[in-house]
Image (cartoon, rainbow, N blue to C red; front, side, top):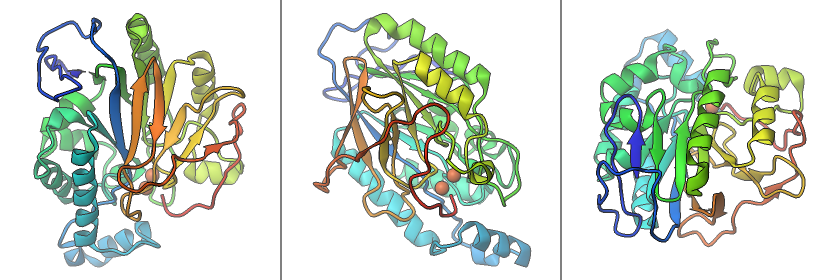
Length: 328
Ligand SMILES: [Fe+2]
Ligand SMILES: [Fe+2]
């Protein structure tokens, strides 16, 4: 695996024994058997251990954002710890954590995340972090600041412009953050980020690697305009048009707290994948195999449950909201 971004050095990792073997090699070149397993977590909604010491306004805000979920920092840590242990057993080469890492993005919550990740025994170059709407409620720059602080070890795989090259997949994290009050949970993609994804896809086209874009929000619009304004992607036309043109691109996202696979067009394999929320699900880890330029979802490790049910074709720009909404 090679992480490219923020001026970081190339780091390569053999998919079989997970030992670094190709430091400094050209990630475009690959001449050995290909099958990369990727793991996916999302929506940790971590809180600081002493959140009860916040002032009244702070406690009210946290309660509002955590509506419907038990506000138990220890339980959220334990859930993440269990999911990270599941990742270590899974044989996956890389872990994507697609946003809402924290409940409201304060510095102490990012420190909790850093503690748990660093205590997991998983190499920082195996993890890509993506911010979600909750991570920006304290400050729109909170995630980027955390990448300079407690999450610094993850900046090469998670910072702006990062690209991680595995044997059979190229991972591109993009942000869907936008300025908004806590009453909204919307997102948006930036045209510049899609241009970057297109450039990466062009660069690796001949290598046969699958292109996996990791982002927090779903790329499609929710069926109800008012609901989409509150909770959806604000420019689904841009995102869906991009996916229509770039059939080699896959999306792995969170935010909806649902596990589902979606097609972009009829008669096409699903290319948009979501996983459940670690904060509420006992088996939140999804696994995928990257092979022959595609991402193939597997059943979650150890559960024996089938892979997510494929949802109806998204159609253009107007997918139907398929489930109710909790605070996302
Ligand atoms: Fe979210
Ligand atoms: Fe969430």
